[in-house]
Length: 638
Image 1 (spheres, rainbow, N blue to C red):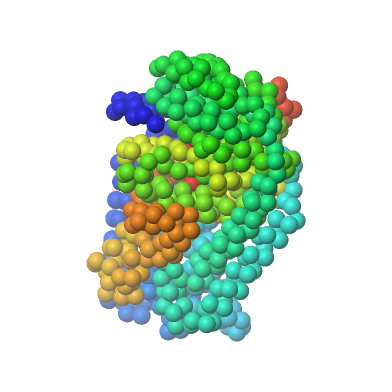
Image 2 (image 1 turned 135 degrees about the horizontal axis):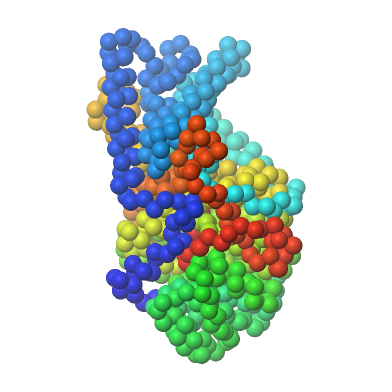
């Protein structure tokens, strides 16, 4: 793909979709830097207070907020203190008034303290009755996991987010999907227990790392064993599904906004893929309010196509979701391929993905993204990231019908399923994940095809990376709010299992960089107060189990990528920075306790609009104003 030049790059990635004005605030980098400074200042004060208590008042005082503990036990690491501090720092840094900040911080801290008290009391009762041996490290771990769930739900409660879609879930989880979820989970617990019994000394040493994200057995080892088992099931499922021969007439829609520099490469790739496809392929380029020569470049490329036909359609209203809905309204083929204008698909992509649609319950099939080149730090880190996410975790979720969404860079839809789900949502981030989740709630399956490899743009500047990742990570809150009815609903595994996990994972990822800073602060200045924090535990934030999993996946999929793992581990810290920035970019309306009827002092917020009502009976329920969307996919990345 050609380089659009410095000015072109700037115009290339920024769009009205970067920060939807109804539900986000376009804040500068200083916002997250200020939050980290608030956290650092609060940490210094809290650790100084703990040091004074231990030194002057009670040398045997607990080093963490442990209300009840077994005699002779102490907390080596102040995990609970950290969670309360990061919650307070985030609340103080929100772009809103002080009443809202106090409400958010008070709810996070109050619920966190209540969780700690309940966990400690349960441990005490269990120990008193002889049911189990209470350990402080276990109490800290349990309260930490519960707090990771509380954090995002408090954010969802206070932020201004899309209203729930007016589309009741009608699907039901297949019984064998529960079997494919529960059996691997039980096996993973049994294997983790067996490993602990066989290697008790090693296990005890490794468990000490668990609180800082290392390789400790217990829930961390159970999780990885579970993913390995379900990924094996997912690979068997996808291989069985692709055995069918299915090649119906196909439509390809390419929304394009100022893409004159790379639209030809995308069209040429579709033409090469059409040569291997056994049915007609018609390509629709939707020129979405471009101000460059996108139409001329697309028409020239279409004229040179030998294996597919195509046309360029103008869409004057800006917004990627607007362009997609317009394309769906004019397409007559039952199966639709969605491709970004900066994506180059592989020659087999159309053939292998369409085979899965022989199953009438399949609603969407995605592929495997790869960087177009591997030359920079951004390329190498992204290579390892996609191997892990799309080559391992996405396949694992497919093992129990739990795929949450398919990246809009390349995905095939059953058009009828899109219409039944209400069309592509407009005016929020994460429209590609949102439509897949709604199709799942309507009873359709989402699948991933790892052999359908396509090349997709990777940011080459820090500014571009920041814009992309904040948009991606903010979308988890937009998608969850828009699909509240699917959350924990029995209509789909994505809503019951994966969406809550992704919310907790987003909170964990946002806390990774602050946790590292907290560990460095203790290790550098307060090691006498917390002598249990050793250097290996500090390194476990970077390394540990994430590194071992990355090595295993890279060796199995692309051995050369093992060389990029050190850069990927650094990138994980950068990713944490942008995840925290995404939380701070959410729109928190001012809170006025004495004027509850005018909570924000603004007009009511419109619900994101769905596709045109004439296409489906479900769509007649959507009556809200159109909020402009943009040109880039806003996938939920884990």
